[in-house]
Amino acid sequence: MCAGPNPDLRAPRLVAPPGATDVHLHFFGPQEKYPFLTPRNYTPPDATPASYRALAKALGIERAVIVQPSIYGTDNRRQIDAARDLGIPARIVVVTPTHISDAELESLHKAGARAVRIILGQPGGVPAAELETFSDRLHEFGWHIEMMLTSEQVVELEPRIAKLRCRTVIDHLGGIQAEAGLNQAAFGALLRLVDGGCWVKLSAAYRLSTQPAPYRDLIPFATALVRERPDRLLWGTDWPQAYFSGAMPSNIDLFDLLLDWVPDEGSRTRILVRNPAELYGF
Image (cartoon, rainbow, N blue to C red):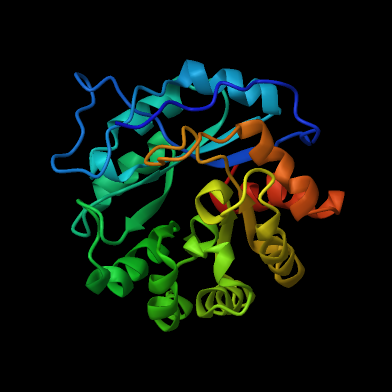
């Protein structure tokens, strides 16, 4: 069982620009209506649109990208229903089988979907062998691929990701671990991919750092990415921080990280507003 999200709703230090977008959040439950996969790696408590609306109001978030978690497999109903009920403009990153029909893709597009998530090594995921074929198909449809990878997988898949036809987003700073340092192979691969046009989410700092908030050991990684391609970076809470065994982070602290990670206001606005508007079609 996972803990629920941190209830902190104090005002952040960072004032959100109009159109600020959280590009990574999930909704869960109730299980009677939206059953989880079996087997699965974790079981979260319910996380509802009403709860997230309170957080979005506190942060000043006006748009959201809802991401299908692994424990729902290819059953995207919980995220689709949440997008309808959220009360702010929303897009969805779904998980689908590779043999999905054009009609099914069109139906998901009308519901707000704009990408397919690939979670390697989790139940119900798209197999790595299908990556190029699926990318070609999604490119023709105007969607992109979002990938949740370990740092080792970033290194292993870098040559393949760099050649994909459709746009590609990498979750959570590519899973790099701060304690491995700036010279780790995974961060070098991530910088090369970003330089080549891949998108990266500045998210899940609490999973990557060995320090408490404000996770200062991650500042050099974030500033290097911002220096490389601020036009290819996105920001998300990862709410409700499921599948995490440590102390639940404050989403207010995660938002305020951008003051240290992206000191320039213009670059922050690009990351929070312009980049997600371009990628997700807001």
